[in-house]
Length: 233
Figure (cartoon, rainbow, N blue to C red):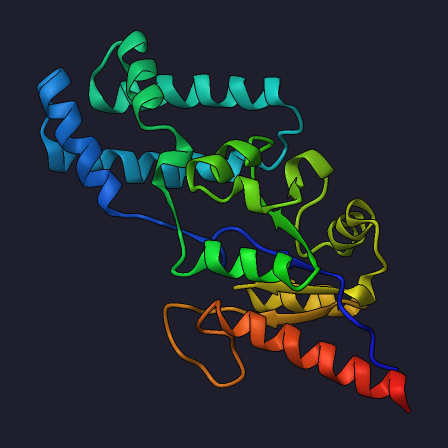
């Protein structure tokens, strides 16, 4: 029997949002004006520092632990750039993590469309506890009913528990949820717990992959039509 979806659960990075590489250039020019640094060297150090430190956030569970992580991160970046600790903190205050995120094309339009069809909107992202802050920065916070950071859940995708905990937070059985993510391992894991799931790749068109977020609304409409047909039989 076909279940009528009652919620759509989105991944954040490379699904609803993406990294804007132009922000590194902006930050480099800001640092040149503020501290006299070379813009290109600054951008390069920012990228390499993030690549080196990014693997260490997985064990974070609370906002206080995240704050401590970013304080350490700022000191490390300051050392890379030859700045004082205070200057490193000022740099990270001007260009925090969320400053590098921008919404995907049509993201807000699609979230509004999901709600207009009577479905709830959730976000499940492998990220820091501060997911609310990143959604506010991208202008999507008011369109999300249940934002979930895996750091707060205590388990990261593709662990099946991340998906079952998300279903509990939405107050729905997994079969009533459509999940969207750019990583195939996460899509497969969601399907294993009973969710409908589709892979998203808005950068490149691939067969069988959602490459325009507006196609999500078509998927919902088809599901609703099939559910009505089944109910009428």
